[in-house]
Length: 384
Image 1 (cartoon, rainbow, N blue to C red):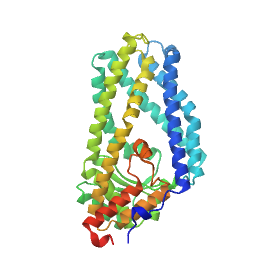
Image 2: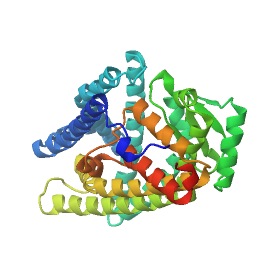
Image 3: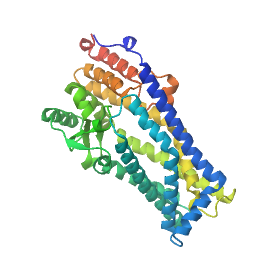
Image 4: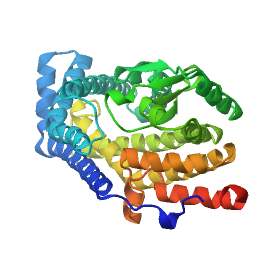
């Protein structure tokens, strides 16, 4: 007899405490990030920093901009470091992390350095467009940003992920062949199946179908391989392949394109208002206005987050449905969900408000109940 929603175990106090602490940490990050940008603009410190950057490399606009972005990045990291460290300690407090302090510090530095490179690249593109095409910079910038979005999604598995984790070809040939066949039935050509050495840093389990085109690959955390049966792993991957079958990556790119276009339009409008009406900056190419650009983009993303999460939950339900249709029995899916919830300390029964505001996936309890209801209607012999 399968488990029903009525007899699913409620969230443990440990899971509730962990997720509550994670939400407060996320809110703290938001307060620090938005507060930093607002203080820069209200106090005029952004002009002080831009002036300092200009004095470091006179008459070299692109280098001035780099120094300014670096100043913002260093100060932002310093302000948020205490919260970052609290997040590191939180994972250890709830016995979810294997990572040592030095390894964490190294990852933080690599992440900061990568963020600095990305932020500099994007800022240089934006302000070069503003200087060369002040009327249409936001449209051209939007097109370039979307091209970069697709490019980085493609190279992430082979360039970005290995900066933080180790990967090795999966040695279990039987499981590998099984997953490749699963991918072929889903109409996607998988370029490889890799073991993700997640246990070096975390006790959580995960799996994903990553990359695009020639970089598309299946990655399975070693924590998943150690504790889950082949049937359970197949069910987890069937869900991931459901995203491919339904074209969720392409649809998400379209959604992201619309959101990014709205962000560029809003940024252009707000910048011109700040210059023409409020006289906050001398001209569009005054990179002291970068915090205002970041504030508009971040504010828009925050406002749209509940809607984007709702769409994400919809796509997850579609991927779940594909999974149930692809496997011979939903029981491994259900047991995998239960194991993931316990291992990752996920909230199985969050409040409706928490689900709407914070969750990009349906709660585990609803996913299991939906799987059982589907099996009861479509495979009654398996649901008893």
